[in-house]
Length: 133
Image (tube, one colour):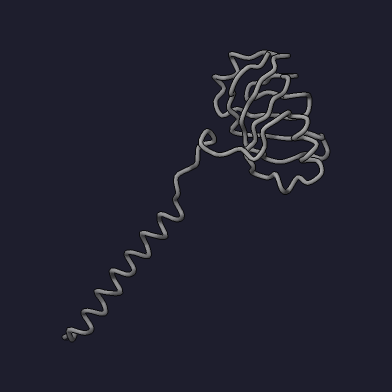
């Protein structure tokens, strides 16, 4: 079975095109994860103000990056609760050793969602920025 030179050129072109498309598809599907530290915040302010904004339209805030300030009302193994209504799960638990209840802190996190039943806002990938006075 002999192929003509034109047929070989077409097969070679299709093979190269398939490799290029496969590479582009792979790079698109397996993008590196973005670090929370590098993302720009959509909101920067008091935790209670953010909570009021989210109560009115929670879908707009889904997966948004926020920087909030608030008073720690409780601490558990994975995170803290700010102002008795915003649960912030920390990216690493090492940061929990340096803070305590009633500390006023600033942190950055991603909005996971608002729980209407418990009236609690949930953030994940939170990182401690600083303790406030």
